Each structure stands twice: as structure tokens, then as C-alpha cells.
Image (cartoon, rainbow, N blue to C red; front, top):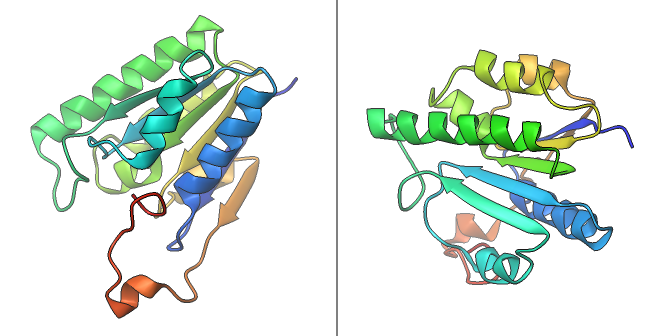
Length: 171
């Protein structure tokens, strides 16, 4: 089966959630999934269930504890570059049919690594591997390279009324 490049971007909620839904669907069909999470270094509720699917879904985080905000440090950049290196090995391994690069758009936007590094990774992906890139601020060159782009726009969000992230829903 031919693999395509999908991008989930925009300021609305649900980009990672959509990617995780696709991961579950792929695993259910017998496709091995690799999820690389950039900017994120702390566990969320999804990790609990994904660990139980460890024979089908692998999750690796390439960020410090919490979610990176502000200017990246050299340590942030080093961790992100390590992630790109691991993803290159994953793509070459032939093990995974779906590779999710969670928050990779924001990793580019915050200058953790240049867009050219992400484009190079996309150009070298094996024909049969599906890649999903999530995160706000997708670079126009990533959008141009993608086969499918979904933009999630926030129309209304309870966060605006002071509702914090809820366990099992946003966290």
C-alpha cells in the first residue's frame, strides 16, 4: 500500500487527538505505529493506554518535562535533533507503516530544527510508509509537500472561560 504525507494543523483543538485516532485504527489493522512527540516531555493520559499496545504502537518523546514555551534552549534543540535522527532510523527499519511526528510543525516554527531537515526526512521516506505531521504553524513548504492537509480552526473553546486542561480529555 502506498503511504502518503498528512498534515493536521491550525489553531483548533484535536490535531494530536486525530493522529492518535489514526494510530489506533492502523494498529487495529495490524500496522505498526511509531509516534515521535516533539516539545513534549511529560506523560499524558494517552501514554497509559498506548503502553498497553506496545507490541503495535511505540511512543517516544523528544522534549523536556512539560511543554516547551518561549525560545528553545540548546538542550531543547539537541533533544529535537536526536528525535530526527531516531526517526530516520525508524523509517529505514521497515518495521513501521505509520509514523506520527506530533508537534513537528511547532518544532520547526520555534526553530528546534530547520524546515529543510523535516523536508529531507519526508523526501527519504519509504514509499509504503504513511507520515502524519501535527502542530500549529505548518510551514508553507510542508503544506505544499503534503498529500493531505487538514486545518483545525478554533471557533469556540471553554479554555476561554477559564477551564483548565481536564484529565482524560486534554491531558
